[in-house]
Image (cartoon, rainbow, N blue to C red; front, side, top):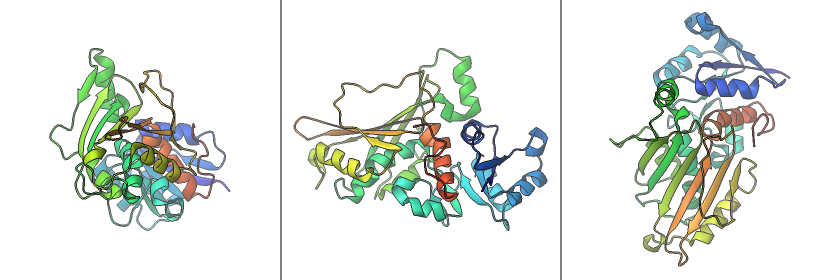
Length: 307
């Protein structure tokens, strides 16, 4: 049976990539509004009330307004904004962490942030297992392609070919921190140090862990094995065990919905670097939304994904 999907904000970066993943599929029919209709509250309200599913690719305030607009309809919503990631009544759209059944049965799903996806995949399973302390002041160092910053940042990087690196969030309190702390089960908000590099897409998220001074922490090998066991049934997340001297992000990176994890450890086991690599527009945004949509629609979890 074909199910209908309305993407509100389909002209943005995330919305366009969701359309690319869904348009060739016979199991979904897209409700597409033209430019004039996208500006009409009545047209959007009609679309919500006609759809089985809606994906919100909107700024936070507009996403909240859209949820109110959909009130009284049967539509099940995936919100790709930050607006509802720690809100009551919303299921966090990271099925590997919260459970596939929870996402499949949800009426309202909040799509994870791109940086939190890498951080949570590395830290949450290990905190749950008691291999990393929940009360440690973690640091997150991360770089992303500029496409995650929206149209204005994309234009800035593409117009000014001299920008190589842009550190931001220097005032602390970045909007991603709340979901990192909540879903990793941490006592303290992590210190988040994000940056943007001169590549269109791709992301590396790193969490350094000084195991020697962490009470009850596992060894680097124990951490890697625990992550491997946690994600053993996932075809999206891969925990690697091969040794590497370096990890690369290439400017030529193609769209991908994978999430790759590594644990690198000191020879004496005293330190480790937990590293995630993903596509900020894939598992970090559009791919995650499609993965949740598949589960909610009762379809194979990875249908339409690039793995």
